Length: 279
Image 1 (cartoon, rainbow, N blue to C red):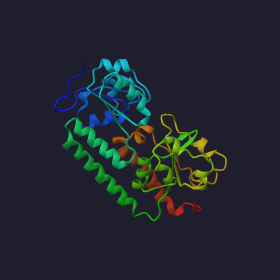
Image 2: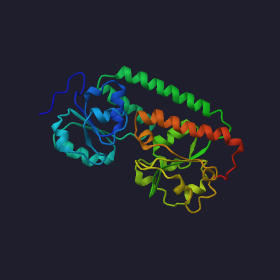
Image 3: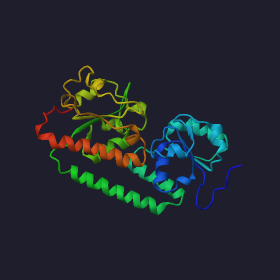
Image 4: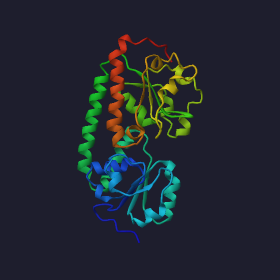
């Protein structure tokens, strides 16, 4: 039998992805966590304090059931099969599917509301939104904004998901594949023509290859990419997936700050940067 959910919200939560764990720690509600994803690295202490019971696509259903959670929280349609197993095991499951910055903030508010931490959440969100506004205002003063190709995977090439594309804009850049960012599924953001990113002439290339190391030299050596502005000037950089591809606090803070630093460095050198052709 499941533990009762009290008026102060669920007391035993299993988080199937990292962003929920990071958020509950930030809110000071980590005592509620009884199980976390094996991919969790934020905060680092969570790996020592909480049992790891899931990967991304699957999990140890028997172990999760043994933990007697009153709520399991997951993310994305890719966890539908795992959510189905847990629901059939009699558990309460909440799966969110946020894709934009606004939806990330809304999801943070939803989770905070479940654990009675509305005021703490709003204080954190207000600070983060103020920082976003300050970064956007600083970038608005630049004469030019760098064109950014963000690569989420290399084989096949997958461009930025919507919240990353939006954070690129806040940071001061311009996503070279805005039409793909609007598509929620990774399969719909595949860049089918390997020369198309080169034709769009990005000033910056940012790689975040979902858990494996970005290889800038491999990208620079792609046939037909030698004259890409970012390749000519050596502006190929990695942002770790845990900092930008988790739709939670990290992306809104550390991920954005890294994007802004890269865009700022480019903007400082922009008068000396060779002009590129229009896409």
